[in-house]
Length: 192
Image 1 (tube, rainbow, N blue to C red):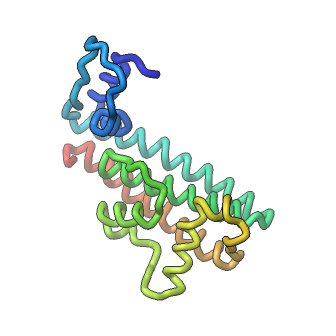
Image 2 (image 1 turned 90 degrees about the horizontal axis):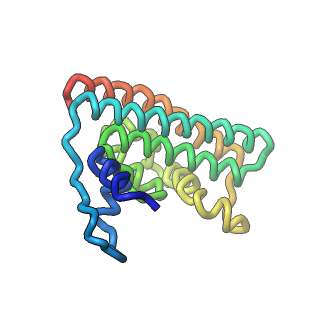
């Protein structure tokens, strides 16, 4: 539960979560006492600070999940490692999308998120899809969100497959840090 004041402050700051609620929400009860505000245009400095905050939060979270992945991998808990690697990837994609677009879709499908981040900058294309094997490996990572946890009899991933995917995720992490820092710097110069 949020107060009308909190909701309006969040809307004025352009919070993606509350913007979606306003846009897609269904009014269950309206006292008529609160008028929902529209987001205000942020200054370049406000936009830079917001992007930096998103980067700090989500990139840090991705790194934490990478540590959890490594623990699971080291113990040969490959189903859990695959799920955690999916979470690292999703958090890196979230970092990119929030820094570049100030928006985070309600989405866990890595294939769709991958398309979105490549639209932000084609240099984020770290998962090749030229061969059937490359497509299958990315599909293993994409499916890990559900299948590695709930369809364990049907989902299988090897150490070699995890090694390949972890290398690609590490490349994505390095690119995310480099390109997002560049983008934040551009925002600070007024190039939103």
